[in-house]
Length: 241
Image (cartoon, rainbow, N blue to C red):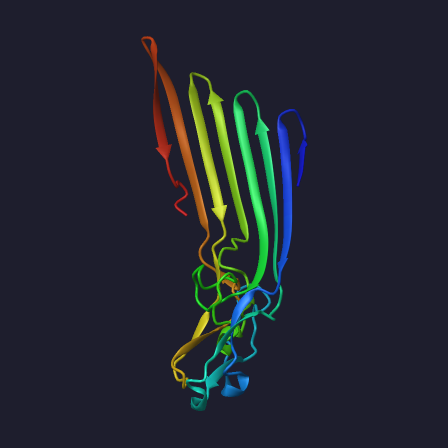
């Protein structure tokens, strides 16, 4: 990280990190391999909004299990041979302070690519930290490499405080977070192993709605005899986002 003072009132700090992870644990179905499935394709609904599969049109493979393999499952705990996970991020903070004013503005940007343990949307499913079925069910391997659930992409936060005349103080906090990453799922109802789902594109090809809030406090002090009384007005989530 780097920290420096631009002027007597303004400082800034920059931090970055990079991490690669490999040989993570996963469950492999040693009893049934790809030869235990027949393969057909379904039309691609259009790919992700962003990411490598944006506007994709290639048909999506679906694996239909042979009934002769039912009951032959045998699971082994192995180190995953799938693509190496990576996590990259930067953080920038700027702080300005005078005798009557204080402002702090901070923002982060991050990029993560991991093999999700399961299909679906929760942190316990769309994350490499769970064993999942990414190696034991080929329908889970399709588009498994993408953004983890907790990858917010871009976040930002700004805080302000003003000491105004007549013992009036005004403060505000604004916050923004990208939505969590997920993938569209295609339901396949007619498989011999039962209804199942496959990803239409990688996790992060679309996201849940972002979160943005604006909170404001106005405070006025009054002298009552030998005491000081503060009247406070708070407004929460004024942006309604």
